[in-house]
Amino acid sequence: MKSFFRTVLANIVAILLIGGVFTLFFMLMMVVSAAAGDKKTQVKKNTVLTLDMKTNIIDSPTEDQESIFEFNNPMSSVLVYDAVNAIKKAKDDPKIKGISIETDFISAGMTQLDAIREALQDFRKSGKFVMAYGNTVSQPAYYLGSVADQYYLNPSGGIELKGLGTEVMYMKSFAEKYGIGLEIIRHGKYKAAVEPYMRDDMSEENREQLSTLLNDIWSGTSAKIAASRKISPTQLAMVTDSLYGVIPELTVKHGLADKLLQKSQYDDLLKSKLKLKEKEDLNRVSLAKYVRSFKDDEKSDRGQIAVLYASGAIYNGEGAKDIYAQNFVKEIKKIAEDKDMKAVVLRVNSPGGSANASDEILFELQQLKKKKPLVVSFGDYAASGGYYIAMAADRIYSEENTITGSIGVFGMIPYAKDLANRNGIYAQGVATNANSNNFSLINGVSPGTVRMMTRSVEGTYKRFVHFVTQNRKKSFAQIDEVGGGRVWSGTRAKQIGLVDELGSLEDALAFAAKKANVKEYSVTAFPKKSSQLEQFFEGLNQDEISAKFLKSKMGKENYQLFEQVTNPKLQSGIIMGMPYTIKLQ
Image 1 (cartoon, helix red, strand yellow):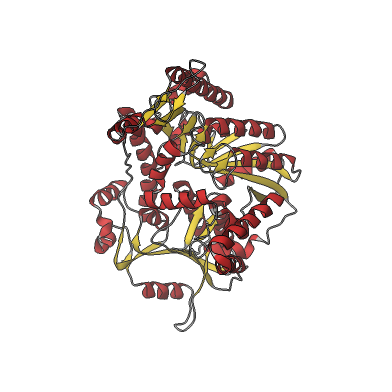
Image 2 (cartoon, rainbow, N blue to C red):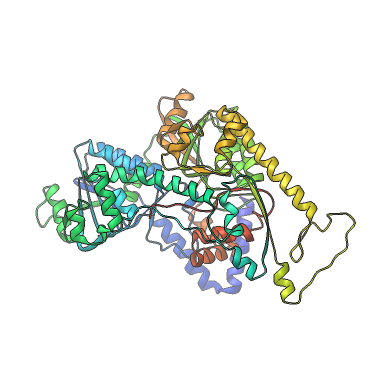
C-alpha cells in the first residue's frame, strides 16, 4: 500500500508540473463523480429488465479498468457471471415482468453471448416475455436478440447477418522491402502465430484449421438462430448468403424479424404487455443497474468459492490488466492462504504469451491444487499459454465456441541489418567467446544462438506436451497428433479429449462446490477490480497511454501483431501464443 501512495504522490507532482493545479483538480473531480454515481438501484414494481446499447459484457473484473480518458464512457460493464445471475434472479423476481433486448451492437465475446442467450431461454420458461428491438443491428446483437419471443425492426433499419469470416495480414514482402529481418523458430505445422512474417499467403495447414474452426462455430450459432426464429437451417443459409437482412422488408418476409415498428410503437407494445394506461410511465431497469440492486445483499456466511480470472495475454513481471506472472502468482498464493475459500475456479480467457510466465503460473496453480479443489472454466480463448496454465486442473469445462488448444511454441527475434546497411549504417564488434555477440539489432542473430533457440523451442514444446499428457491422461503421440499449434473449437476439443466437459462458468462452480462438499456458496472474484482512484493513477502511466493510442489507431488485432515484434516482454524468451482473434461480427 505504501508503494501505491508513493506512486500517487509522484504522479500528483508530475501533473502539477505539466498541467497545473486546475488540471489535477478537474481530473480528481471526474474520479469522485464517477465513484459517487455507483449507487444501489431500487427496482420498482411492474419493471422491464433492459439489455441496451450501453451494456458492455466482460469476462473478468480486470477488463473493466478505465483510463484517465474514459471516465465519461457511457458503456456500463457487467461481468458475464453477474449478467447470467441477474437474468436468473429476474426469472423469480415479481417486480420484473419481462425482458427487452434493445441493442444494435453489443460488446461481448462468443462464449459470453452463448451464456446470456442460454439464460434468456431459461427465463422464458417462467412465462414472462422476452422481446427485442433493433435499428441497424450487428450480427452479435442479432444472435442474442433472436432468442426473443418476437423480434421487431425499425422500418429503415437492417440486420447484419453474413456468417463468419477471417482475414490474416501477411508482411513478409513488407519486411523484406524495408530491410527488416526476423529470425523465427517454431514447432508445429499449424503454429500460425509467426506465419504472417514468413509468407505472403495462407498456408494450406492454416487454411484447414481456420476453415474447420469457423465452420464449427458458425454451424452451432446459425442452428440456434434458425431454431429460435423457427426457420429451417437451409432457409437461414440462403438468407445469410443473400444478405437479405440488409433490406427491412426482406427481414420480415424471410423470418428474421416479426414486424417493422418505430421505437415509440415498440414502447407502446411493451406497455400493453404490462397492461399500462397510455399516460403511465414504462419502468425500465438496465442490466448493470439491476445487478447493483442485489449484488451487495448476497449472503457472505455461505461457503466461498474463489473465481480466479486469467484474462488477456500472459507476460513476465508486473503490470496492470492482462496476466502478469508476478501479480498473478500473488493472487494464487492469497487464495491458497485464505481459509474461507473452499475451492477455486480458474476462468481462462487468454490467447497465451510468454512460455516462461505460463510455466511459473502453472507451477503455482499445481501447489494450490494440493490445498483446494481446482476446476477450470474456459471463456472465449484458452489457447497456447492459456491452455498450458489449465493443466493443473481437477476438471476442465469448455464452452462450445471456446478457441482451444494451440499446443505449440515459437521464438522470434527482429533485426534491421538490410535497413541499416541501405542507409549507410554498419556494425562490427569484438568478442571473447563464439556467441558473446549473440544478438545485434544491426547484424541479427548468431548461428549458435539460432541452434540453441531451436533446441529451446523443441524442449519447451516437449515440456508443454508432457504436462498435457499428465492432465489429459494420454500418450505423447496422442497429444502431439492434435497439437502442433492447431486450434480447435470447444466442441472438437471435447471430442479429442483436450477438455472434460462442455459447460459454463456456472457448471464449473457447481462442480467445484461439490468437490469441496459445499452445498451453498457465494463467489469471490480474484484479482479484485482496482478502485477508480487507483485506475486513475494507473492510467497516467506513459506506456499505458501510448499503448491505448496505438491500439485505437491500429485496431486490437493489428496491435497484437505489432506487439509480438516490439514488446520486450514478449521478446524475452519462447512464446506460447496465437496470432489472431475470432469474433462474431
